[in-house]
Length: 279
Image (cartoon, rainbow, N blue to C red; front, top):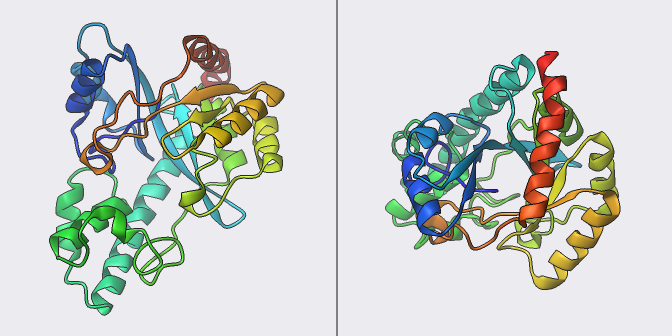
């Protein structure tokens, strides 16, 4: 229920993601590129027999000054409010990317915006594209080394903040667009902060559909805590690999959602269709 293609910051085209998903033994795959639905048509055209596609995206949000990601499934791409927010986020990603490249150059890293844009191609520009350009420039040995205070990690020397949605407003937009939302990797401490239970409760009251319990960045204790929280709040216990192709070692299928929870999540999306049709 969580994967990326080169429509955002994954390394593989949507068609290749679909092929790899089926090869991994999956019967359902959600394509959830950052702040875009652009890869979905290509994914649909490339669906192999036996694989179903859940259309989705990963929305950029900010809570209490911290980055927060919301997985949104089955939204109406023509919903004007959500489309406007996607455009605003994508536009500001370009500004942010240019500013981070400028800061890196001031720090002596020989990267250019043209290099980053070439790596991103038609995809939504993200920090992983900059990290790959830094590898090409010889500043770092691997992309993960970029996401530190030395470089483009939160608060880092070349880090630049960007526009993001209030998560409660984002949840309401997703519901209005006929979709359902899941909080992505809420227990991934290595991403800089942990989302507290009270914050999750607020998001649940706003209409959040589920928590991503199974994620490669969640240890056993974190999964147990999140599963208990999801059960207490009546949220779906979801899961996904958060695969980015080569950047994450082609790990599609390493984390999945239980069939019963998947059915619950899809029923929530179906229940939101009426709201979406009114917009």
